[in-house]
Length: 166
Image: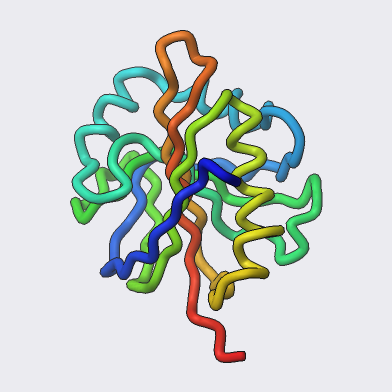
């Protein structure tokens, strides 16, 4: 986690707008269900979605919501491929309304896709146990910018948090 930086952000209500699928949770390697789902979204739809983005995290994001508390391999979650926005929702899009709250924002750069898997693992196994925050209900938002060759990634992972009372 040496190249993982974080900050705590207070964010007002927002929504995620794009396309949604119910997919299994995969811990190792790429998630084939998410990859197939994204491939199935046409470029015209993605251009329209991208045009709606008007908030941080910027650009197209992957959003995981309704995760099983166990986070066990194979449990299902709602996956949104979309943008963070305050805009109205077009009729043919899915939307997730997200209430105001605090977020821990982790920034990380490294080899793709391994560094993304390590980022999630390190946040939950190293960062949470050593910081005065706990995760709270809400979606987890991942923004990834890939290098031209697709071998390196700059990622931002937004996790909903609240200060621990312990």
